[in-house]
Length: 283
Image 1 (cartoon, rainbow, N blue to C red):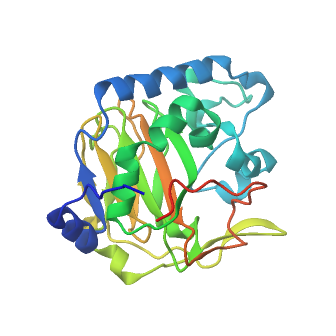
Image 2 (cartoon, rainbow, N blue to C red):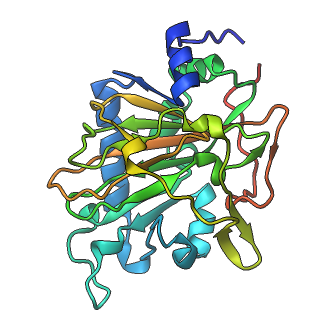
């Protein structure tokens, strides 16, 4: 196979103890520019008059529709809750109204696909012990100035469950992420407490199997990073981000990876693909 892990023992120790890891300068300025430019092109081509699907981590059970489910294998566009006026019209240009684009950028677009399957990602996953990893979803997240929505405390394994759990989040800052514009926050070490609840899809739609626990905000630490930094997130880590009330956006590209060796994708996950994803490699 020829893949060599690119994490050292100190980095692995920090990830295993705290549940996340920051890799500075993971993406070059040219790579960031390429991803951002491609997203500008995709947004320019998007006809928002034909589609107005809203994404919300607080109300996704109510706003989920076929467009959301079909996004698992498409490039789909989701608006911020606060992007519309009382008459249902956008209050500002679509480029400043989109919450995220997902969930198959890594498959459907050649620029995002090339970056998402690059050698440095493969080496990182190899370091983390993945044997047959697949990217199960990808998202370009905008965190728009003034209206960028809150992402409530959650664990990625809740939404992308395998048995045993194997999800890892790979969150790339395409702009500086600060406390002011809505950076990630996490509870260090919370991944060691295991999975709290699952997000289930059944004949009634989607719902959580248990209510959300209460979290003490004093337990969260901010993860402020420069553009180009990658935040590696354990699937059981409790993390969140707040609303962006600043005049500065906080673009990010997020991948979620699961293993397909020795574990099974849960049939009641929200993602149900018609075609199985191709593994990035097989060790």
